[in-house]
Image 1 (cartoon, rainbow, N blue to C red):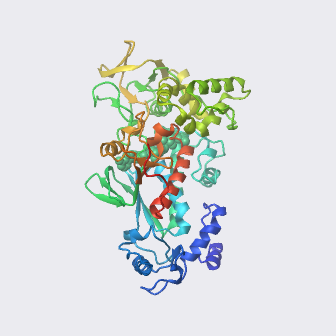
Image 2: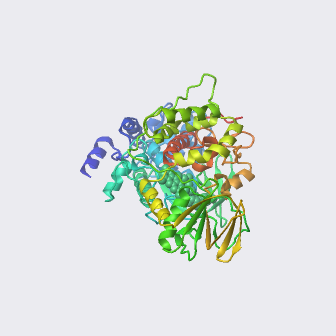
Image 3: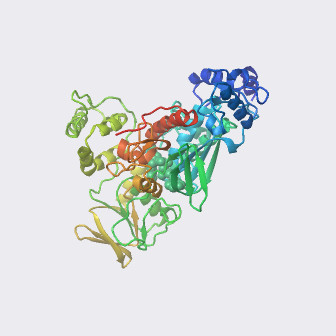
Length: 560
Ligand SMILES: Cc1cc2nc3c(=O)[nH]c(=O)nc-3n(C[C@H](O)[C@H](O)[C@H](O)COP(=O)(O)OP(=O)(O)OC[C@H]3O[C@@H](n4cnc5c(N)ncnc54)[C@H](O)[C@@H]3O)c2cc1C
């Protein structure tokens, strides 16, 4: 507290948030100092508003508008009509205690309020606070799962993160941030701990709240429970249509709709006893108390969660799990290290063809004296580049033949989860089957599942654990229908520029509609786990700050 006051007396600015990287502070403080210059009387441009100066001081939003308007008139430009139109021409700073009201700030809206939106909002606040850029962040989530989204809103503490705490920090420059938070919260946590996902949701929520507190009054954050049904471009912004008829005009909107429910299972829609979306807050597995056996369709990480929850909720039921290969995700094996460069990826003649890449990965695993997991993990940072180097035919081949092996090796279970599943299998409470469900229909105990080989399974409940389909989110479909986005050629989400701007069917790069997370899967392949989302969030935040809040042109406006 005392340190904070001393800092403010010395610098005229609030003390830097501990979450801000110290190497950027001098730049930020210099700008903050300029922004806090004494304001000139209304109607007269302050000294700092000479040509070439980047920041001004102003006692209020309206005064800033008038001052910059008169400044531009004297320079021969047209008077500025609104505050929004000033932002591209000047960075405007405000005295900390004389901030503008939310009404005249540009809005940065997020469609979806989960981890992707939260990490981007945190990155944006951190990147812009010391520039004193005024804006208002609105996180719109249809189920009010702010910060938590689908993955981290579970209330079941048997659901653990599938990555150790050391890789899950929200702040890229502070890898120990999550571990420190967890220890402060009294959780037993070290770098290699697999925390409950519920705790991680709390962590994201608290980190956003703390960062937002430091950004006030320049930038403010609002979380709203609302479903966005459509977007309309307006030239200098985006109008979001909310369910219920309300409209929200934003300077930019970020598509963070995340893990849309899986594709429907074969069988009549709405068949009683079929859980179409295991993570739905009302009709998902959280409230399910099965009285008869359960069939999970899919044997990946979602099935693992469902089996843990339902065997605990109903001590007598058996969970059957079926997939074409009946493969469970592999388990993590400590120590969790990622040595770099275990696969030779050099290729003289352009990108590595899939066949050669597969051969080299197999050879690297065979030659490596340590755990094969290290080889898989060492590939992770290179996946987007390798993926984009494949032809469309190779990408399809990978999805059809190899993806399931990659997924089970790359997205692994926490050791505790693997142990619990092994115990359930040993006790006969979890049974794995190989096959394809060809039809679901009403059956004697609730639902009858017909398998591809003609086999049948009678259960009380069927849970769709086949995994999210990012392109199936209704809002994403509306963007495609309205020509505001272009479907990825594999049908996995939408096309985006390298820094996340949506691309329209004609190849135009949107300045106002951006995206991150699972919806970019077709383009990047690995885009769902926190480390990848965190990196995208940083890039997107920088893009919003540069292109939307400061009006700089930063990318080609048309792509092939
Ligand atoms: C069960 C599960 C466990 C995972 N565990 C891990 C892990 O341990 N480690 C790891 O690194 N990664 C993990 N992941 C992957 C990754 O962290 C998640 O995919 C990540 O949470 C994605 O966040 P998101 O915000 O993009 O999507 P989501 O979490 O899906 O959140 C999107 C939110 O947007 C809302 N929404 C959608 N459409 C609209 C609309 N039109 N209007 C308003 N709101 C809307 C949704 O209801 C949802 O709340 C896990 C994923 C899942 C599904």
